Image (cartoon, rainbow, N blue to C red; front, side, top):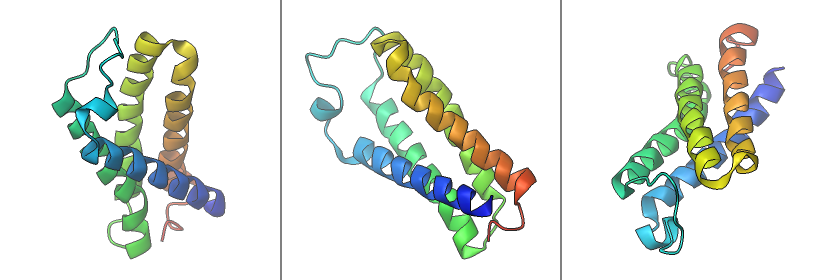
Length: 127
């Protein structure tokens, strides 16, 4: 179970480091093309904020356990990122339809699995 948790953690960390990093460095025209007309408009500053949260959350999924410094932060990062994914599911379902919301939903479920696994299943093996 520890190996499965580590694999999921690393994949999720890579996903959030990439996703958050792109939200931090790409210009507004690339993130939200002018021809895209969503039902719910998200301000550019909020996208940058989400990018910071995702990037730091991606680091939080890995670094505390690898460095053996406060490994209890791993489940906390997973729970915080799952809250972001709840918002992503809602916004994506409203703007692009329910089928497009499957990816953030599965990502949120995997994050909750990591949070549960690192607190109940293998808390002492997160190191």
